Image 1 (cartoon, helix red, strand yellow):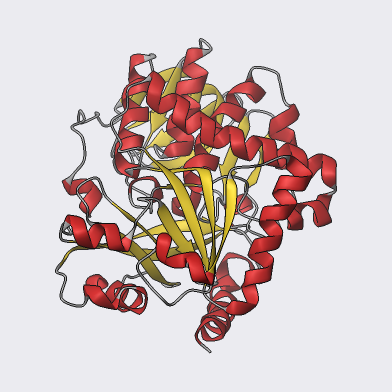
Image 2 (image 1 turned 135 degrees about the vertical axis):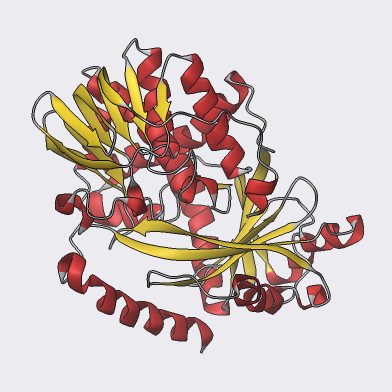
Length: 417
């Protein structure tokens, strides 16, 4: 991926061998695991992280780099579903999640191309009213003044494309280089005393204290955190059925001229649209267009990812038809049925956080802050998230795929027609 080719240097972490002990063992070295490790180590816990591949290998090192405000579901939905008190707490935590990302970057001097702002576009005129209503609702109900509605006749000020009907500019959102952010979290965690082991896939765990086994070693810990998200596989069937791993794909163009870059993204924000199968894009630090579009629901990736994604890019930017595509890559994320994250405990000392549904940069990073609070005895905010309903996918892990494919194909057709 472009992210790998522009990644900051990192040490090669060892593979786990032999028997070790820790206060807390974390399975997974993405944002959830790394942020959890860092926040817990800063509270004085001895933490070991086990990663099946390498740091940031999963969605944390492959995503669009958007750091959005709020939750994955909009605030009006949350109020209707849970009432104002819970919705307000979720809103505050959503803003704190963005602040947490920014704070960690500043505190640990993480070089990850942090930029500001996001624009969300209506791809159908019928969504104009919803976007305008959202801006008014957040201003009147929550005092949020950092969001502006942009009507169609003003869109040329925020994008060099005529395919959209309106937009919302969120000045509080951020965007960044996702892999370098993950690598920065790992470096900060190690500086705080965390031990990270790569190429150390967990094969089983049991007991209390928990004995976590890999092919060549084991860790005995008082507490364990499952931070695998879309890569959990068969490790824990009790929670696997509440998420759906899906594959999403991105490309990176060659560096654009200053003129073309200014046309593509006049405000240099991250951007996304209102399609159910969402398109999302931004400029890199060296003026490449990083564009995500299209997904599939099977084990494999398309044979030609560059052209698979390019068709979606050209629907928005036909002026890039002659632009060279330098990189194309894919990755796996986990969604829940209602797009709310899935937090909880399997037993008193086994915790999990997953199902960020495309909102993982802020939410997964913030999850590490919440789990550190919870393990230290302050459970209120973790429990609020854990009490959000996350239903199982119909058919469980065996039959969820056909139902999901049928549903996503329906919405894809609806997007198109």
